[in-house]
Length: 150
Image 1 (tube, rainbow, N blue to C red):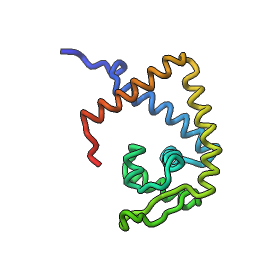
Image 2: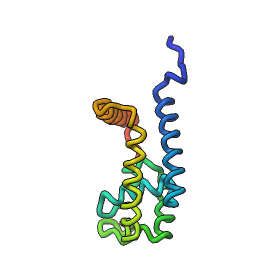
Image 3: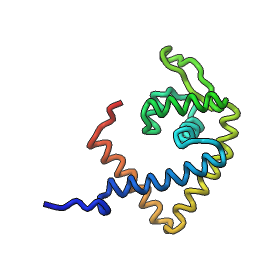
Image 4: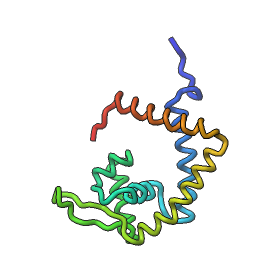
């Protein structure tokens, strides 16, 4: 039987890498823009679309309902997100970036791209593409093993 070596166990290593990157990003976004990671994720996702329900945001961001709800409330209180009735389901609302939210996104997005470039600076372009492909395959494999319980 194989022996588990935590420092060689892929799920552990992915978690550690994710935590380190998230911590660094969180510190930057909080200091520069007053955003926590869940809030930034909602801003970024909403910037790509034309209104989403909190349920849809949970699926898109892979965050739980409580985290999405808290982030949405914080963004709405700051005037960065607007809520409107969902014509497809009166029990929910659509969230959209306000003009202020869009302006904030336009400030944060270049910083996010800069951080990503710094993280990937030690990689060759082919390695970066290979990493992206492998991450997609890992995400797909994980989805097959434990389907979304939405």
